[in-house]
Image (tube, rainbow, N blue to C red):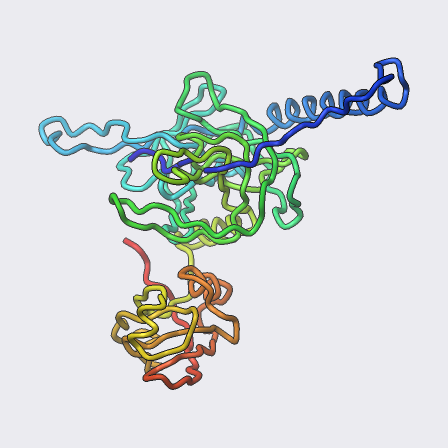
Amino acid sequence: MPPKVRSLLAAGLLVLGLLCSGCSAANPISAKPAQAQGAATADLRAAVRQVSQQVRPAIVQITNLQVQPGQLLNPAAVPSGVGSGVIYDSQGHILTNNHVIAGAQQLQVSLPDRRSFQATLVGADPQTDLAVLQIQGDNLPVATLGDSSQLEIGDWVVAIGNALALPGGPTVTQGVVSALGRTVQEPGDQPNTAGPFLFNAVQTDAPINPGNSGGALVNLDGQVIGINTLVAGQAEPGVQAQGIGFAIAIATAKPIADQLVSSGHAVHPFLGVQYVALTPAMAARLGTNAQSGIIIGAVQPGSPADQAGLQARDVITAVDGQQLTDESSLAQLLSQHKPGDSVSLTVIRGGQQQNVSVTLGNAPQTP
């Protein structure tokens, strides 16, 4: 089960030099920017070094051990994948990605100081691709969790994780916050399948590779502001995207981690429908002029959607008046609610528009 970190596109920075007669290094007007640039570079280098020294000890390597098919006569668990994690409190709790630990029979955690522990799975949440482990040890290094809501595009960040599981401890790379509030969809566990949508992700150009999954994206104050999760793959056939990685914002990860520690699972609102995005061809077939939305393919019996009277072939175009612009919009808007909340869905059925009130339930727990 290789960690699901993947690759995307970053815009190159074109540096333009001014060509003019009479310019020289001795000219104080032209020398000041160079001096300022040198000082800024030195400050950045010092900051990255300090952040690395502060946070790197708390970044662990997680080895996913599984019994492989055909090992019935020798059922010892063997490494199936390697990822990263962040020790974030003195009780030894470790925040990581669910896909790093999925399917494990045993979880081995190795610290940069060469200590190794058998970890306990506290809880996992496939919907947000997060998990919490715990180890028992003395004087464990702890990373500080920050506030990702304070991030701005262009902020310098440092990615720390076990890239390619290279020996010698975690790898440190640097980059900037390239974008905020991204919605990305993970690949599924099986080929050609889709995984969960991740909302409000932090995009960065800090190099991230397989093995970085579950590691830390850190600001220059030494605070963890994201959990590195995936990178983009091919921009088009034969063209590998570069420099676009995504981290789950700590503002998303911390509340999930708190739920996993307190109860072993996370609570999500539940509607109970299977759906696909509305296309012009489908809209024409259904006789609707809606330009965007989703078509219900099936309604789960006994679900909130069933109780509210939703039906297959219904087209949902809005939630509480907010338009559904793409396939991820419904899940994103519902994720802003909690079980027990009532939402108003704008529904087109048989060419007629109506509003349907639904009281959201609790999402079933994934085994």
